[in-house]
Length: 421
Image (cartoon, rainbow, N blue to C red; front, top):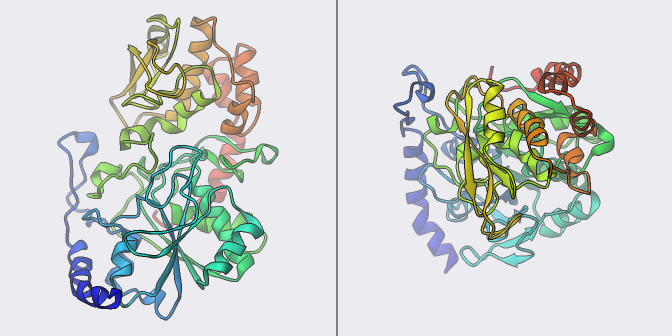
């Protein structure tokens, strides 16, 4: 019955693959979001793979590492599309944190199961690495692992480390690895922020890259393979066409699917590489609200915080005194005071510097400020430097100036792996 269904849907899939490439790029009325007329429509790695008749996967037993963001331009999941196409021998799916279909919250996954929609076996990769993850790939019977997940551009967003772990495991298992590229939603501008120190490596940062890395997943895969993997994996990247490094997500023409439950919009991604640092404090980072990472606060905080932050004159952003009651996570059900971040000039906005400024001013105006007891801030920022400098009374320029040498070194290394100039 499945074979006949696949044959029936194959012609529709071919037509959809061809038409996807002709969809025009959307633009916004805002001048800082407009896409110049001369730019070609963006095509993702998957669109290019499909338009080429899946030639890169010909004769292969394929497994896909993906989640709900692995969608086509018309919002169909690539697993459903490939499963219905007789040209692809899709035999397994591998789900990361939050799961393949996205049913789990932060810190959770869907476990091993058969996907109800396709019947395909779904294997859980979350918190697996090295030989145990290599054993999963071996048990699945695939010979080619394909990765297609939307990243958000921050070192501590775990999907890029799922990519790293899967590349390492594929090398151990003797599998080929194919990365289908997608846009960095906050552009591919120069990397910003501190670079991880290896002694602070965790699943929110395996290797020394900048906090806002400014790379696509295919570029990161090339960097991982060239700089960090002891045994490089046989790697192929299917790059995008029509994407330029200054392109924000809303100019891509692609649907935004939340990569995780607390990443609801591209605006969230824009601030995330800075305000996620508040996970390392006793303030709410806005989880449990409709504006996570844009709303920050705690009991006892008042309008002095927004005023202090605005006095710094940070480029591209303003701060509004705000009050909110999270429905879960920190301060669940309690009304707290704080700030809402309003970015008015995305090109000028520096999310990491802004995050540091908010930490510095929060500590000055609220005597209840504290770091999480587990020093989570050190894992997020990649060293103990941000925490100790702020505790010692350092200002924003001092803190951000302390990482400039290592950031410049990372930028030089990064340059050799960029696919889009």
